[in-house]
Length: 117
Length: 113
Image 1 (cartoon, chains in turn blue, red):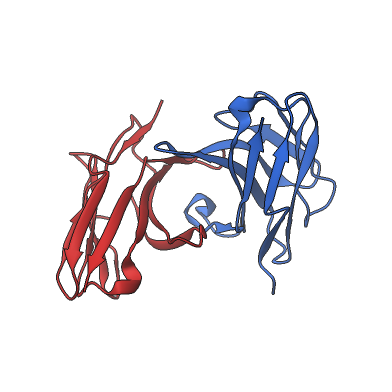
Image 2: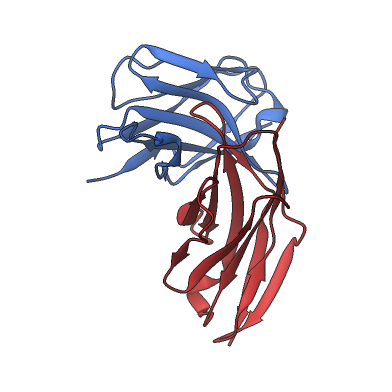
């Protein structure tokens, strides 16, 4: 199993450009999520999905769009990049099986470092 | 809103010694979950240990254990017999349900040989 993969690893954008961060998992996990990590702030949840066709907002959703057309993929779109979106982005996934699946381990991808100039 | 506070930005420990990392959180919920994640220089987030709030018994995973004090809303991580490979950022995290997970700002642990 490759686990959770993210592409690209690094990206530099100019203000106003758009791009999509890719995330894929091969563990057949229902739950997938996107976080951003800023210096001194830990990780913050951007968007999440509990299955194909279902997405919802997390703590910091503004400026980002997501869709979930398949179980495996959960892309994150920046429609008009801003310098405030300079960050490291992590995708994570977990199963939803079990009584208390919020307790299930989340598996993280290696991250994408995004710089917006 | 739930917040997670890690009051120690940096900690250091001598190899083979024991170190405790602090974490407090704020919540009005009675049922929730707590986690410690490790992030080495590779940037990969790795689950170290987790605790269900309704369980009074402290979780243990090999050299890693927690001191969970529900009334005090405290969830500290103890690393015994520290190894050079334990050097990393450690993040405490809180989760109430499927749509949220809150992380602390992290503690950078240095292990001295």
